[in-house]
Amino acid sequence: MKKVSIARLLDIFDNWFWNLSLFYDVKKHGLVLMYHHVTDELIDIDPSCICGIHEFRHGLIRLKKEGYRFVDIKSVESFLKVQPDFKYVTVTFDDVPDNVITNAIPILRELNIPYTLFITKEFTHKKGYISEEQLKEISKDPLCTIGAHTVSHPRLRTVKNSYEELRESKRYLETLLNKDVDYLAYPYGKHSSISYKIRCEAKKAGFKCAFGTIEAKLSKLTALYKYYLPRLIQK
Image (cartoon, rainbow, N blue to C red; front, side):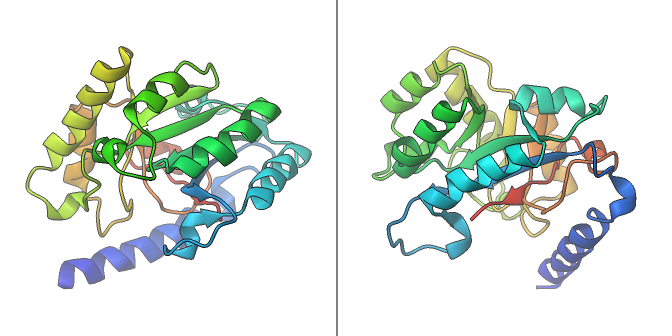
């Protein structure tokens, strides 16, 4: 209980500290957007994990009008070292339920926006989520990058096999798709689930960078946390 309380305090501190305006230039910073479900249907799930179809499209168009450039996750990785002279944004999805395939990806293709799918191995055999066959096909899309989201979607801080969860998820996807999988999103993604040890294991497993769920922009400060990069929850 004590550890959870300390972790919660760290979450609050990061949300406040990482969003201080002195750490980012309003004319050049990055946003990493995180989605789960994109649907207008009623789903028995945390409302923060649902984004309506109209809201999804409108949000992307609004960001374009605000001067953001949409980039792929590989570009984001390179921007950690040298920040560009413009505002940029990248789109990511966790878990990848089937409504992402039917509702979100067609909009992204229509608007020519790159996106990243963070895949949980066990979910590819679960009803209502992307299947292995769908994953193989979608991974051929030049707009798409596939990332790892562990084997079983645990709170990594609380399990003994955290390194195997990371390493095996990477190995599974690389074997299935016959391509490198360089990016990771942690399940749950805050201090209650992610420790310094977990971040070291992500690096050891061979990922180039990893994303949590502390809600902040990518700035000179947050870009220093290569294995705990922030993302903004979109709903």
